[in-house]
Length: 139
Image (cartoon, rainbow, N blue to C red; front, side, top):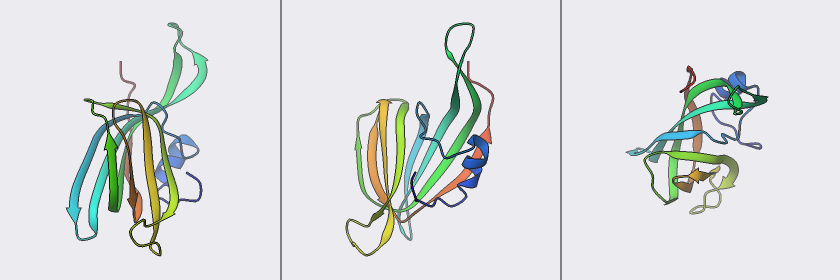
């Protein structure tokens, strides 16, 4: 994540011990809506931390399962490619970046690549962690 400040990021950092790359996170919702400050994007992710340990089936054990709700405010320059019922992220990158429309306005570039499904980018004025809810492992 670099030097990007995400409001309430401590919810994620306290849960995982750091800000994760969200590798293999499942994006189960991506919603766009209009507000007074351009568009707002809500991104909901199902994520867990992969450990180096293997389970009885030979899969890496996953711990710290949770659902993370991120909200991005003042969104512009949206580009999305691909489509699938769900998206599995390769990574989610947030980096400081001036507004491409008005170079003096500070904000961040948001980019996600996908192992499966859609990938995209956009610019936003600010970001926040709306919630992090610990969950049970999915079968």
